[in-house]
Amino acid sequence: MILALVFCGLYYIVNMNGFLADSFALEEKAKVLGDLQAENQRLELQKIALETYKVVDKETNDLKMVSLGQVDYLDISIASLAKN
Image (cartoon, rainbow, N blue to C red):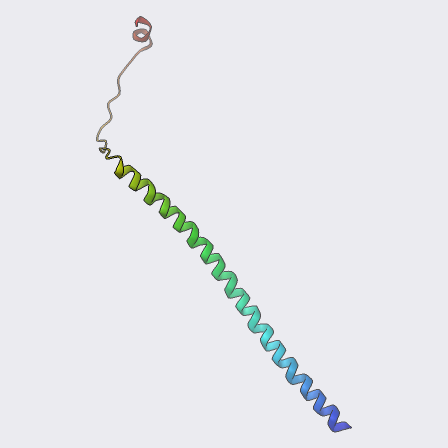
């Protein structure tokens, strides 16, 4: 009878030890998964930003616009507008 109790106790301890080890491994994998999901989200946002820049750059190149050197503004006063 005592031998059966000792055997059951050892069986319980071995199973609980395995359960706890699996639980810790699962917790660590969940943490790694969370870190990877956060990194994935950051990379997706970076990808979207880069694609947006690429699209804008391509569209401006397709328009064949000339780069602007210096800007000269016309000086129009209110009096000259009223005369016309």
